[in-house]
Image: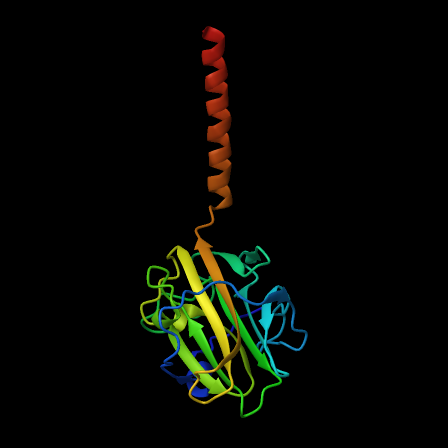
Length: 221
């Protein structure tokens, strides 16, 4: 289940935009937890379940988080818009010049049933240490249907080893100026370092040793 780099596709299909309505709105999970059967995210073998789903006027929008390769852990979710993924890079993935590598997880977005009169903006957070408001995030805007599974590895200065919370939001508008919000979905991705199995084994051995030490001290008392 390879995850292809989509910076070229995103750069060509989505136009960087600055929207006036975003202000300092904090990104909080939004949408209904479910699935979009028609979503392929431009690939194969990418789960289209466990998504935050929304949309109005015959339009379906969705966001989710999936792993980039089968060699890494599957992201988990609380079913309410918060996802959990591991930090680090996808081993075996190509590394472009000047890039440290691609994260173990992808963010996936979907828009279906839209026409040229439906407008959308995707807000992408590639820095967990930065602000959490929509105005702080990178914005990509387009008209009509779109879907993809993308990695944050294309972001300038992105550190795949950084732990923290990343935020994503997908807004649907009824006007080209993107001032009239029809609906939106949003999710947060909590990224933490996952201990290696050997580290977990050492931790367990240490805990057993500590228990034995406490018992011996108790008998001596």
